[in-house]
Length: 308
Image 1 (tube, one colour):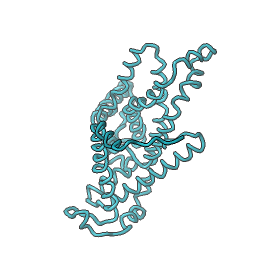
Image 2: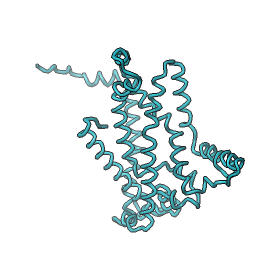
Image 3: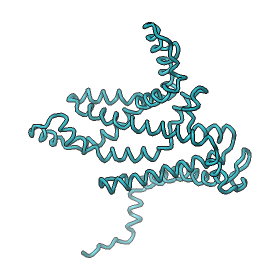
Image 4: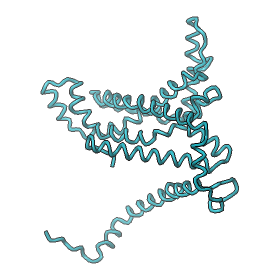
């Protein structure tokens, strides 16, 4: 086939016709460049410098790999890595199924009005700050809280849930699931809206029950989103919810609650060791990127699906 030649001035006409859209696109590009990529470049530079308060990034002396070596030579890093991995892996494992099951349960409701009501209700906790959520946890699990009140009423001994190393992880994971499970269903609902309802009708005619319809129709439609969620979660395996941990953080829980994020905050900002903190954050980001790309490559080879 012979290619059609574009008339002279075609690009100018397109620019004039869609000028508003191009301006909006330009603003988005400028925003990401200024607030995402420029700080990233500065972060890489600071990680190789001895940055002190009062000095500029350009004036700070270069120290090479010193800041990165400090991470590996620090004796407390093994504990930080252990705590970070325990929290993040448990979050991935326990937080993976609830949004999928909740999406399927709400999607199968017959009443559309009740379905919309349930969706709205499960979204609400996402908009609570961790200060509010910790206040709720404190009301239930503190020494004078609701749970200890029941324990005392039954003749038991008061339990210090908020200072217990054994209770820390369940409280952390439980509150995280409660806060995020509803919001996490949005992607799964978006995937299910593209499913042809006639597939469910055909499955019913063939005698498929509710579980069989989920396996044959619902789950395959959610598969790409599930793959996307898993790959993204692997990218953040060395990251934790800093705000949440800081709310539950106290001196009795240092051995299990001190993670990479809290160390970066304590050393990088508290002790003004900006080079050490930035180098640690950069290294964690690189590891997360490698894990995400690796997971995406393996997923494409095994199942033929990937994020990119």
